[in-house]
Picture 1 (cartoon, rainbow, N blue to C red):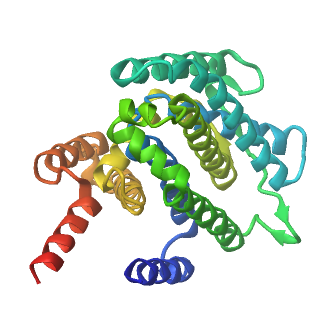
Picture 2 (spheres, one colour; picture 1 turned 180 degrees about the horizontal axis):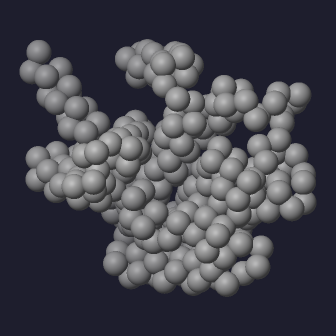
Length: 311
């Protein structure tokens, strides 16, 4: 009951947020929140650390941009195309990566993601270092998405849908098996579960949702660039997840909001001249690791649970 009330309040706040905050900034935050939730599904609930999720984010951004700008197809087709492309790439990468665990899994995903990055750098359809600029937003069911407010509610609806999908996955029997694999993989195998199949399904779902976030980002900012597929983007989503709280539902959302807000503030503030965003984020990460091992939301949940038990 408490969680449902909290989610309801958050939805109301998000519906009213454009009245006080610039919609494009809010949409960027929502896109990265969905990206972080997708990554958290893999790291927080399966225990697989991927350093290559930017490949799915970037591929979907490029495919969506190409479909909308070059092929001139409807916006929803571009989003579905980008998400599908990311899912297929996730299937290919997952088939190779899940054969290993721990640091080996992380290094394989990073290596494959860098191969994808250099492909984007050389390919003609990506625009090289210039990227795909001027991606049209189009319309949806007669709704003009060129209007920032219309696009905001469109993006909000999709991101809430993605969050609900992650929530239902985590709290389903499938999600319980994923947690069992994270806690004790040999025991899950001994119980008769086909662990590799479960991990592959989780990897593909995570890649698809990351792709959906990248596709939305290319529509919101009307740009798909190499930075979307760079390993820095993979590092940022790891930071977002750990800051907010790995293995929690709202943790990645809070972490993404914190990182995007700081980047935006420091980029437009005089403070950013002598205190760059990477320095600030690095300092916050160090403090979080030392003082908030579970992340912001993880620590709050632990404190609330402890207080409830004491009372």
